[in-house]
Amino acid sequence: MESTWNFSPLTQSENATDYICRMAQNVSSLRKDNSFSTPPLDFRKVTPEAMKEIWPILRNEPGRTTDFSYGGVLMWVDYFNYEYAIYKDTLFIKGVVESDLSRPAFSLPVGALPLKESISLLRDHCKAGHTRLEFSAVPEYALQDMVDSGADMTEELTHWGDYLYDAESLATLKGKKMSKKRNHVNQFSTRYPDWKAVRLDASNASAAMEIMDAMETEGSDSDMARSERELSRNMIKRIVEGDQILEGMIIFAEGKACAFTIGDVKGDTLFIHIEKALREYNGSYEIINQQFAKAMCDKYPEIKYVNREDDAGDIGLRMAKESYHPLEILRKYNVTFFGNTKE
Image (cartoon, rainbow, N blue to C red):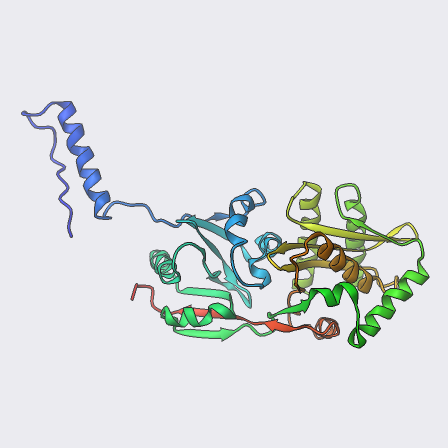
């Protein structure tokens, strides 16, 4: 419906007050029929301060993939160019396709709005920007709803599925399947009888940074690996600044830091975002893995699962993750809507 915009100048029969009232009625009329409105999705960069607004909505997402964990968003803000908007108690996150950083994409919307309504809002947003609507890292549980909402193409994100484990198994290392891991932990304890595991905080964060310095020579030289190391340093800084959601642990042996880890908890799942250890300390990876899982299960009895994220297609990393016998791989998908108009 076309609105009537009565923009005639001040007439001889009306005074200034009458003219102002007429203009106000014009604006009110346009707002009522949506001819005069601002776009509902106002995207802003995700920052540590913004996580205080994001987290209350994000924590209600029902899945267990790392992309919807606190640290999963906070750590990768710069790498995936995350921005966010909150509209009608629904969180929208804009970034790029995980497997192709040149393509803009959105995360699965989380919150009060029905998915079809959220997709309609994003269609309008993309239409205004003359871009294609694409989602990345959509959890498998939401895939059929995406198809029912008019998705034109779905594609599995190979190499990006998260490894999900039984939390008690990692915390206790009981059973025949975990015998090798258990032996590594026992050997570490025997070799370094003075070892101790403590909470990672501002008082010992510099020791974690020293481990990261060692990683610069021990680690891979790929673009992804270099970026991950820089982002790991940023997460240590978040802990130093007093972040209340992140959890961390650092292990000392012979008076030297040899391993540390950072994660967080959402619902029944512990998410491991960073795990670094010095290879010269045999068993350091195994003991930081086991000790952190145990400490977190003790602190949060509701934990049933541990998400140790993806292998990014790295064979060595895949073998390491498989050696802990995951319960399943949490698959993720790219989902594309070719049309930018509402159905």
